[in-house]
Image 1 (spheres, rainbow, N blue to C red):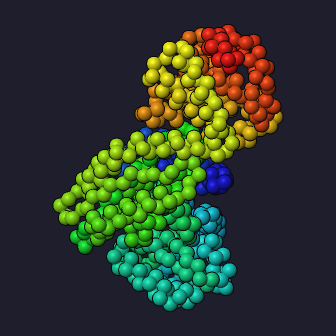
Image 2: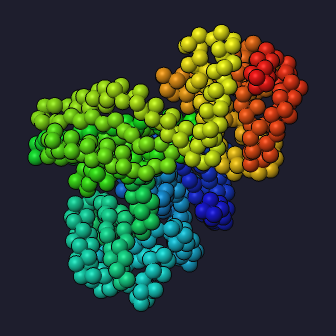
Image 3: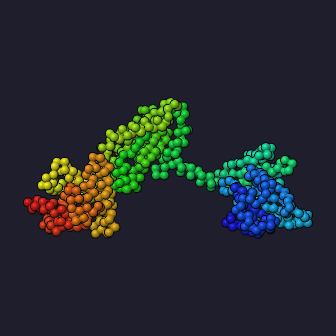
Length: 585
């Protein structure tokens, strides 16, 4: 819209006008400008000023532009050369943040000025129109800080407040609070005395009690003799911009997921509290246990919920006198002013107790914590962080095995509690599997592996929706595709536990088929681990001979017939033979 207005003004302006950027590149001129230079408009576009004019003219022009940029205000110059005798009005234009984007200038012909006074007035009105189209408040004051002019936006604003004419009045007479008005007048006098521009930010309280922020730049107007005769001001309401800036600043310091302070804010805050009066400073670091298992099993949304829950516990225990930061993915840092070891140990103990007693429906909440104390100003806070981190990882090494085991155990319990698997089902499978394993001559270690795979083969189902797992009718293709992912989910769960990683492949492959048409890898024959082939047979038989939500139980005879039919296609024929003989006995 603004560009369209500028183009319209240039196109219809009857006197020469040009626009250039801060790199001295001419953005555009109008027809009147081209005519007085005996060139076409295209000749000037995108050319540098020193490419168009000789050195003397360029030097004068540069000096003129530098004055405008320095004062950030409208400047008037008299220009006399072989082409024109005119007044040149040059002014900067700005972006929304009061940064100068470029310069535009207008030549006003003053030849035969007395005979063309009316035409000159018209030209000044056009210039006035340009000023009135600007989005800022523009005003002019004399040496006594009385208003001698202002643009339309200013006029409209004060008319709405009941002031129809402000000419000849000071800020004390236009309804501003006395203290604020006096501060404006004091600033005006200071600017006129120093002959220097000033940028001013003012907080104004409206009649409704709202706080508004106004930015303004005031520039002294100096005549040819160097005397100041007044001030030109440009002001704008930047309240909304300030709110956005404050919000962005807050967001830049906050962790979006947990609402805690982030690492960026830590870097800022440590500068504030790294003072003698705040010593000793307690530094506590924490690392959440079991996050990877939850992410792999239930998805990252549940992992996020775990992080938010532990974040809230840390925040509640630490209290308002502490600063809590999310340091990284599953790491947290607590800074506490005037705190020693006993205090930090008490916070750690309270966090651990609250985690132990918290009823989180997926796994037992667990976090490893370590503390360090900064006692002197000579100590580097990052050395304390490193010491606390080392304590965290020593604790993780001690707790890791039990934490992982408890995670897997709690997942297995959840599977049973939600009626996805029963303890009786698991015991029957273990009985069948052990007999087959012994018939096949498996070693004790191999039988132990078989027992674990049998117990945990469906552990990945904990990550599948109950709507699918317990659906009483046939699954859709999309639902079945989701169901099939339980083998991969189980694999990832067990891979996260060093003591169970060796059985992860058996869990991954227990739905592979002898003919290679199974999932998820499409293995066939003896490419499929032996433990997985055994579980496939015993699990299928038990599923057929017991009621499920989606099917009624078959008789043993019917189930054995089904195994015979699928022997050599779905199942390992040797295992099927051993199993059938075992059942018949």
